[in-house]
Amino acid sequence: MQSSSAVLHIGWMARAVAALVATGRPVTCAVAPGDAAAARAAGARVLVVPDPTSTTDVLAALARHGLAVADFRAVCSGLEFCLLNAAAVAAVGGGGRADVHRALAMRDKYVQKQAVRAAGIDTAGCAVLDDLGTAGPPDLAFPLVLKPLDGGGVRDTRVLADAAALRAAAAAARAAGASGPWLLEEFVPGAEFKVDGLVRDGEIRLLSVSRYLQNLIEVRQGGLVAHVVLEPERHRELYAGVHAVAAAAFEALDHKDGVFHLEVFQHPQDGRIVFGECAARVGGGRTDEVVRRRHGVDLHAEWARWALGLPAGEPVAPTVADGAAIGGMNLPAPPGVVTAAPTVEEVLGRPGVVYAEVSLAPGAVMPDTTAGSNLRAGLAVLTGRDEAQVEQRLRELAAWFTDRVVLAPAH
Ligand SMILES: Nc1ncnc2c1ncn2[C@@H]1O[C@H](COP(=O)(O)OP(=O)(O)OP(=O)(O)O)[C@@H](O)[C@H]1O
Ligand SMILES: [Mg+2]
Image 1 (cartoon, rainbow, N blue to C red):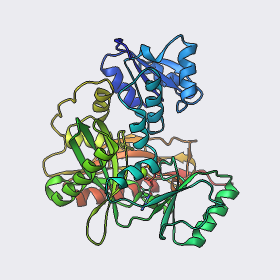
Image 2 (cartoon, protein in one colour):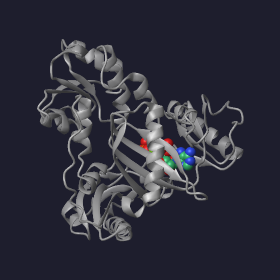
Image 3 (cartoon, protein in one colour):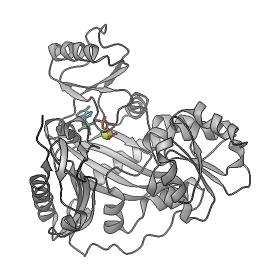
């Protein structure tokens, strides 16, 4: 990379690009056609590509515009599915902040689990099945979890109780024309936690642990995607256990710098923390809004500072009152064509709500939320006097919102 201050962001993510633009650097975005207008409106120069996850597409777009990777000081992405591509494109230009192997270990579920297991960290044993249909019985004990190797948002992820369930999954995948490879993992029992934060020079600067109201896999049965931030003072042992696993995992994955989103389980018998997976990105939903209010850290700004090789910023005062609690959620709704839904203002009027987004408008099609944890009618962040009240308010908000979504009659 050369001395220019220009930065190339791969893919479209409004808050990541805004954080880069806010640093005053010229920002170029390689985005799909449908995102070009939004990227331009954000102040970025735009390279339109068929697929921002493709290295070929990004290199070709640069060439079409008479640009070289080396014209950029940094190549980065805030998007899970573009992180590896950003590292690969940066490598073409002679280097970058995210080394390709490191980016792969923070993204590929098998590579990551092998590295973490090799370091002696407690995590599920796993195996790759190139083809579900022809795979023999796995060398792993049931129950098992089957998932796409490059999954996200719980897509096509299911728990298999026994060999018959694996055979049924293979038949269903064949019928749906779904190709492999697949990842098979030992099922980890226990409650699932969401961990978000920042690591710099190998030191964890921020660690925010939240309890999911229901493990994410339960979205497949209509479970809520919602979390409550746990107060470190009230959960000292849990925080210490999560910190130890996070520190060991980052060491194993060589993730010394940047933001992180980690998922862990707490074993129901002995309370030990079991590593689930981790990513070098800001957590999904409105993790950014929750963490900023609770910890005074703007995760996108910190991600941008890391991407540009700048030192970490200073946290500001949290806006959540001392002793109070905060959480965030996906707003759920039944699938179908929407004729009426609550507005953002109405959601903001509900108890404790401090932030809301609603993506439903009359005529919009609400997807079936059981297909993925990233399918939702909107997002909300709310506070309460303690964790129990936040949890109760999240559940009540979900029920209130769902009740007020009106669907067109199905034909
Ligand atoms: N080995 C396992 N044991 C128990 N539950 C699991 C296991 N693997 C996955 N799950 C459940 O399935 C969910 C989705 O799995 P995973 O996190 O691997 O996939 P994902 O689709 O990448 O989700 P994300 O949106 O976090 O990227 C997890 O959050 C967890 O609830
Ligand atoms: Mg996950």
